[in-house]
Structure formats: structure tokens, C-alpha cells
Image (tube, rainbow, N blue to C red; front, side, top):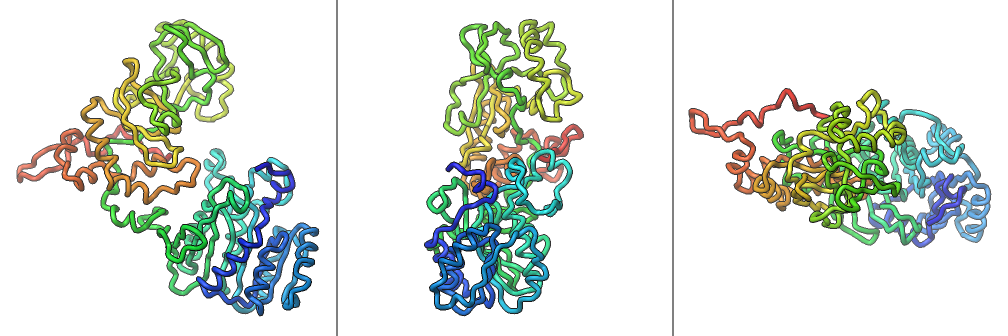
Length: 517
């Protein structure tokens, strides 16, 4: 859907009347909401105002919007309602209003309803928009997260946290249409700040049908309640009467499906023998990725042909290859300039002079890579490379695709396969070991355990952090293959009492550095 500048600037996705009516009916019938006051802080053209007047006939309704034309349109649309005297609508800038004083003057149960802007702070900054909240580190971000882009946030997230603050000493319900990912972030932050004051429900909606937007969206309901259970019930759609699963926090993890996690939580634990890794990061595909024309002739991403030595070129599989099951052949090769991170690259000059000349010719492209990780590193450095990269057998999975599709990948063209940095993998010396671990990783207990923690609407749902939560050893124990596992892990030892004990392979190595990814 093409967004106009104004629509983008204000995150302006007007709610259809039929959807607003359905939301209000759910609040009354499923959640027994009976508010004294209803507040819609960004009422737009008035869909929720009209629905509220129809359903909550005795409630005092207050609507605000920054767009004066919308305010006029809303007022006109309800002028014939019998209970219109219960409504106040006026023009106001959400970010400039003194909401603390406004809310403090209201007594009784409050319903905060609506459809806050579906836009991020970075999008507004791109437009030089003034429709932004004042600067504050409301998510308690660390400095490094700003560098990596984590400082970006949805405006609706900021607004929802304001709503929760309004109800910190009041009784009421928040009911808004928002991105599914925003609802999850708000749940976590509200729990951290308010403990057990709120409980939540999520009804999934089809944003494509209602708004023409390709995003996972929901009706998010957050209510004050004495029982303080913030496990969030998730319903498949607005018509559902029973939840499909529960989102919640266990073991300091936010989980998509608590029931499934609790069934298999005994499989959790980091496995030091089998460590998930990310593929190669180079940030210059036009130079570092090539296609083979014939023999030693290759063509790069700029369409230029070069004769290069093959010693530094390896088969490359990307997320799209793994996601579509293309693992028996490769389309591109990748130039691997180092054996490990920080390795000196000058040796390429003597070993492969044509390759060195190629790198020199494209020196400008490689020096202009924006990421700070390349600063003060040898020229033409890459990341995500180590001894594990050069093992012949791998179990790999795309981090981008919406399914747990693990692939067993062997060497191609008599060389180990490399992956791009959107792929996560385990590596092995032998095919036999790879097939054994593949059987464990793709077993039902493993898949269910991992699925319980993955939010499939994320841009990169399958992360190394999640994969590393699975103890392959515990899976082997669950399936009755513990002895085979210990044999492969070189940790099978028998103590004097005849019991199994941990071997060296399972003790933390002084050379293993844990990196948060």
C-alpha cells in the first residue's frame, strides 16, 4: 500500500466502522467492561466514538485528535445520536497535552480505546516530522543499542506505556489496535514497571483486510486487576471465545507458548560441544560474492568478469536457498579472506596474486563499509568466520523464514559450504555425526521446545539466542540416545563408581568466549 507523506507522518490508518463495533462488543460481552469514562486520545474520523455511543450509552466519552478536519467530521457523524450530549470532541496534540492533570480529574472506571499511529520514530525522523514525543530513554536502552538501531521504536508503543501510566492509580482497561510486536513489548515493560497490576488479552486481526497493511496486528486489551496474572491469552481471531495459547515470562524469558515451554523446559541449557554460529558477514556483496562463468573466470555483483584463483572462493548458500530447500547446488561463491576474525590478510598477496589485485581494485568499496566492526581490523576483513566455518558437514537454518526448517548440508564442489549472516548453523567433521545430531535437532521435542519461544512475526524470528537455549544433550537423554551423544561429544567417561561423569568436552573451555547476539 502506498502511503502519502501525511498518512505516513501521522501513522494514519483509519479504523473501519464494522471493526470498531466488533471491538466494542468484545469489550462488553467477553470482558464485562462497563466504563464511566471512555477516552480516545487519537480519535481520527470517529469510528470508535460512534461504536462507543451505540454500545456504552451512559458513558462519558472524550475524543481528541490533532487533525481539526477529523474533529469536524467526527462531530458531524454523531450529531443525530440520542446520547450525543455524553460526548466531548476537541482538537489537541497528544504529545503536548498535560495528560497527568487531565486523568487525575476523572473518577470511576476508565476505558482508553482507539487505534494509535502505526509508525516508528525513525520513519518520523526521516520525514523531519514534529509529530513526535519528547526525547527520553523510556525503554532504558544501552548506548550500543542505539548504534545497532534498537533505539528505534513504534510511536504506539510509547503511547500505550503512557496509557498504562495513567491507570497506575486508577481502575480501567486499555483496548487498542496495534502491531502484535508492539503489544508484546508493552506487556514486558508494564510487568517490569508495574508488577502484577495488569493482565492482558490479544485477539489477532487481519491487518491486510482491514487496513491494507502487511503487518501482524491485533486487538490488545490491558486491564487493571487484583489477581495480577500477566500471562497474556492469545485468541486466533476476534470471533474466538477460547485462547489458542498463552504468552508469558518463565525463567526470565518471554515465551510465545507457555504450555508448550513448560512441557519441554527440561530440554533447556547451553550445549558447549555443539554451539550455534552465524554465517559470514562482509557487508559488500557486489565485491565479495561472485558467480562462476567457467573454470577460473568469475563475475561479480557489478557485472565485471575476473580471472581469480579458487583457493579463497567457497560455495555460498543464503537464507533463500535454505528456505526453499536448495542445498544440493549453489548459485554463488563467496570470497573468504580470513580463517578467523582478525587474521592477517596480507598472505593473500603471495598465495593468490590475482585475488589480491581484485581486492585492491575494489579497495574503495570495502573501506566504505559503514559498520564500525571493520575499524582497526586488517584490510578486507570479514566476520562470522572461524575453524567451524571450514568443517565439511553442517546443520543450517535460515533466521528469516517462518518455519523450523533445518537442513543437512554437505560439501559442494569438494569444498565446505559457507552461509550468509542471516543463517545459523552447527558444524561437524563427519557426515555420520552430522546425521545423528540432525535427528536430535529435528525431533518433535526439540521443535516444540524451540517453537514455544519463537515469535513468528519478527523480522528475524529464529535467532542464535533461541537456538542456543536447546540442550542437545538433554534431547538425546529424552530420546534414549545419551550414550551415543556422549560418544560423539567425546565426554563419555566412567568413574570408579561405575557412573557416567562429564568429560573435558563438556567443561567450559578457557578459549570459548560467550557473545551476546
